Structure formats: structure tokens, C-alpha cells
Image (cartoon, rainbow, N blue to C red; front, side):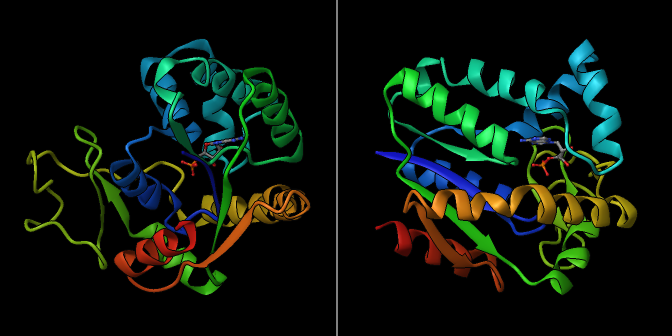
Length: 214
Ligand code: AMP
């Protein structure tokens, strides 16, 4: 059974590792960032409201994300586990999650903290690209496509996230330190934290995570 939270600064590789873990463990990835971007793309009122916070590199209000996750955790596919990627990000979100999980009568197994030094985060993020069609992630230096700026799988032109600019990244790092890092302490008190060194190759980091979970 795998009920995991992945904690990590923007650029820690948490999204990519969550996708790999999903494939390995056969449980769904629940990414609030992806769900918010989807709502934006569809132009829903919630998506429009979230957009202003996201583009400024700030956090979307707790009640909005808590509502999304609450709904998502009612779906059948989380029965055998889930990987929460990007949620919770604040203490009120973690407390709300405890209530939701308590109502469902389920417990978290681990909180994986992916730790990465600040100086490697900014180049990691500003070089990120992804395929808008199949979502495959790329990096202009570390994970280049075969043909520059086009997806290897579906040949779609790659895009950069609107909040992956240098200014927004600084804000996002700041939000992480002020609002999300206190969660490490919150979950340490529950003896759930497994810290992983997030520097180096994606494969190396993935192996470290698997080792820590087994
Ligand atoms: P991510 O893809 O996880 O980096 O999230 C992108 C952006 O979506 C963040 O910078 C926030 O603006 C917003 N977001 C995602 N998850 C949350 C959350 N749990 N709480 C508040 N805002 C969030």
C-alpha cells in the first residue's frame, strides 16, 4: 500500500519523480498544480481565480485547493494508494487533509522530502519545457528532445510554463520556505518524514526514493 506525499521545493524534481512512482507503484499521481493548470485551460471560474496567484508565483487560497483534493480523494482509483504531488503546501492544508483521510479511514504511509540546494533550483526551473499535448517533460540542458523544441513522442512544439520565469521562481521559492517547509516539522512529529537527497541525475534520485520506501 502506498499513500505518499512528495514534499519538495519547485525544481526539486518532485513532479517528475511522482510520475515515475505512479508507473512503478501503480497508484495515481494527484498533482494540484496539474489540476489547477487544467482548470485554467478550460477557463472555469476557479481556473481564472487561480491564474492570478499562479502567475505571480504565490499560492492559490487554501479553500480552493482543499476543495479540489477532497473531491479527488473520493474517486475509486485511490483505493490502493496515491501520490500527492504539490499538496499539502500549508499547515491548514495538512490539517484539512488529516480530516479528509480520517473520514475515509485511511492513513498516510510516508512523506518523502526531496531536498535540493537553492543554487541548482533556478537553472533547473527556467530551463524546463514540456509537451502541451502528451505532457512529457523536457529540459533545455538536462533532458533535451532529439529535435530542438519538439516532442520526441508526438512532435508537438514544446512550451514553457508561465510561472517558470526567473521572477516567478524567486517568489515560488520564497512561498515554499515560508509556507511549505513548516510541514516537514508537522510530519516529523508524526514520524512520517523520509528525507532524500534530490541533487544529481533523475534516475539516481528515483533509486534513492525507492530504496527509502522499501
Ligand atoms: P506546481 O505545479 O506544484 O509547481 O504548482 C504550480 C502553482 O500552482 C503553484 O506555484 C501555486 O500557485 C499553485 N498550487 C499548486 N498546488 C498548490 C497548493 N497545494 N496550494 C496552493 N497553491 C498551489
